[in-house]
Image 1 (cartoon, helix red, strand yellow):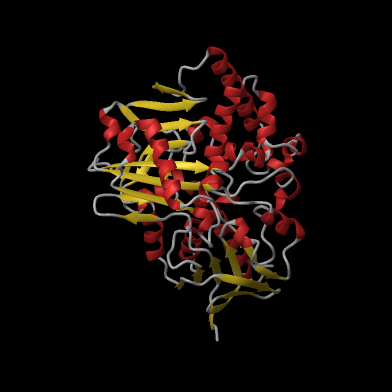
Image 2 (image 1 turned 30 degrees about the vertical axis):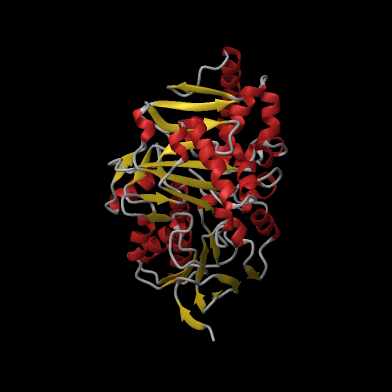
Length: 460
C-alpha cells in the first residue's frame, strides 16, 4: 500500500527549478514535500568525480548576465573559474581547417559579409520579440509558421555562411534548424540577451565553471530542505478538486493544497491529470520535444593542445563533433576535452556500436588537435536521450505553430497545479539561470494563493 502523507505544497521534480521553489516556499513557512523520480537530485545537472578531476555530464556553464546562478553559487560558497580560452581556435569548414583568434576564421570576405548581414537580420527579429508573451508579437503567426532553417535559406546568400549560422543554431538548441520555429528561436535567444551572448565563451554563456562540478549546487540546496525529499518516486497521477490536490507517486500518495510540476515538458505530458489538462496546455506539452545531444569527454595526462598554442575550443560544419572546449580542472593536473554531437549528428552516432562511436569521436578530436587526441587515458559519453526521466537535453524546443497557438498556456497554472522548469522561464530559458527564475516565479504564484486562503479568501 502506498504511504499517505500531507503537506501544504508538493513539488514534482528535484532539479534546480523544483528545489528553488521548495526552499522559497519553506522560507515563507509552508510545509513542502519534493518527489523525485531518480535516486538523486539534480535533474539535468550531474557530476562524475575521479581522483584528479570531475566531469559535468549535464549543464556546466555560468555566463554573462546570469545573475541568479552567480548569486546562488556565491551564497552556497562555491568556487568558480573561467573556461580556458587562451590560444587559437580551430574551425573545420567545408573540408578546410582554419586556425585563428577572435570570433571568426579568415573566410572569403563575401562569406564573412554574408554571415554578418544574416546574423544582424536574425538579431533584429530577436529584438522585436517579447520574452513575456512572444505570441503577442504583431507578426507572431508569420514568424511561427516557418522554421529557423527555412528562414536561413532566404536570409543568407552563400551556402557557407548559412552553414555557419545553422551550426550555431544546432549548438544552442541541440536540434536541427528545420525542427525549430523562428518565433521560438527568437524568444529563446531574446531570453539570453542576444545570439552572440549565447554562443560566446568570454563575456558569454560559456564563461565560467564550478570547481568540483555543478551538481554541488542542487546537493547543497537539497541539504537545506526541511520537509521530505522522496527519491525514487516518479509521479504517475495528479488529481485535484476545489479543496486539495492529490499527487500519486510510486510509493506515496501526497495530499496538499497546491502542487508544482517542475519536470521537462515531455515528461509532464505523460502524467495522468484528473480532471484532464485543458487542451491548450496538453497540446503545448506534447509539442515541446527535448533536444538531442551526446556529450563526450576525453581525459589526457596533460592538456597537450595548450603547448601547441591552442585553446581547446573548436567547431566544424563537417565533423560529427560540432564543438569542443577545454574542460580541464583549474590546476590543469590533467587535460580534459569535451565535445558535443547535436541534432542529426547525435542521432547518427547513437545508432552505432559504442566502439565505433568512440572511434569517430576521437577521430574528430584528432582533426581538431592532432594525433595525441586519439589516445585518451579515459573516455566518457553521456546520451541524455537514454535517461528515462529526462529523455533529452539541453532543453525542449518548439516546432512551428506551437508557441503562437498555445503559448499562453506555457506558464499558466491549471487550478491548483502550477508549472515550473527552465522551459517556462522568461530569461535564459534552457539554462540554469532560467530554472532558478522559473522556480522563483512559481513559488510566488503558490504563495500568493495560499496567503489568500489563510485570509479566508478562495485560493482556487
